[in-house]
Every structure is written in C-alpha cells, then in structure tokens.
Image (cartoon, rainbow, N blue to C red; front, top):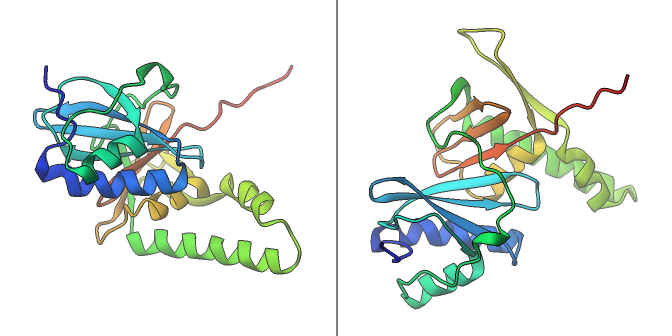
Length: 209
C-alpha cells in the first residue's frame, strides 16, 4: 500500500487546487481517490453546494479523506506522507462518473462562462449599492439558471446550469482556453474545464398530492 500523498510531478496542480478550496472553506475536507494507475482525483465540497475535482499525479492506491489545509501544509513543507485521515467525516456522495465519462450534452466557450460569472458579480455589487444585502442576494442568485445547454445531436438532452456551477468553475481557476464540456451522469450535472470539473446534484422535486 502506497501512502505518499502526491507525486512531485503533481504537487503544483494539487497545491493550486487545495489553496483555492481552503480559501473558500478553511475547514474543507479533500478526498483522494484512485482514478487510473499513477493518477488520483482530488475531490472537495465547496460552500457553494457543489463538488469540485481535479486529476493529479500520484501513486496513492487507497481512497482517503484528509483536511485540505493539512495536505496543503504538508506539500508546502515538502512532506510526502499522507496527513492524518478522517474518512468518516466525508459525507458527500460522488457522481457515478468522473472526468470524461457520462453523456456529453454540448460544449460552451470558456469566455461565455467568464461573461456569465462577471455579469452575476456586477448584479450583486449593484444591488448592494441599493441597500440589498449582498450575502442574501448572492445566495438567491446561486440557484438561478444562467445557461440552458441543448444537445445538437439529441434535442431531448437539455441541461439547466445554475449560477453556483459557473461560479465554482471560475473561483477554482478551472477555466482555460478549452471549451467547457457539459455532461450528465445519472442525476448529476457536470461541467468540465481545462483544469478541473464541477459536479452538482439538483434537489429532487417533491410533489404533494
């Protein structure tokens, strides 16, 4: 069993992921899950209500959960050992598919995702200037559908993308030059960008008869 957390070749990518996760939630957990030989997927749940993931180089062959801050501190010290595990503290289900799997609905230009995120930020700022609570407005906006993505091959495949997913992509620094791929995996909706992906499971509608 290998317990080296991250290979030297993956330290930079893992550090960027962990630093952003910790900035959004200093107490966040990160789950290290084998993806394929020599590669693991880092998973974290953000206060935005979404899961974020990034692939990094590692020979770790166990599924382990640690504190994001502790793993980041270990990497900064050059410590290769896995920090103390807290597997039982991980409460989030994971999508049944990881990067590159599931049904591809369509692609969205990265610049369009940036535009939507910037427009939402301006809305919050303008509302705050009018005396509307910034935090309350932001929480309300997160559930707003900001993109409707329809498959060109199958028009019955439609994805309604909430702002929380767009904001997560931007704030995690996942956007690059590549288009963002919108995927469906069971009840999960995913957005894959150049440097990582965001997954969200909308609440199931409740019908009262």
